[in-house]
Length: 94
Image (cartoon, rainbow, N blue to C red; front, side, top):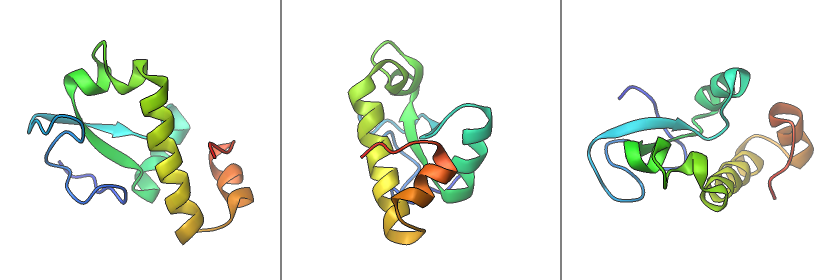
């Protein structure tokens, strides 16, 4: 797969259903944020349905927010305080 996640140890299976057919989801997406997500390892493996399907993270605000909160907690524990997170990602999710 090539990407490494600091949130999940294994990028080989969907974090929702365990499917081995996964796509990389950038926790903070959009052109600029995708590169920042790669830099910090804020990516997770999702199958097509749980990524871009009708039940996927792009259509499930609660799931999206949960993953963003996990990434922010990791950032604050390893890279800097909340104000640093906001400088990098534009807002706080906590």
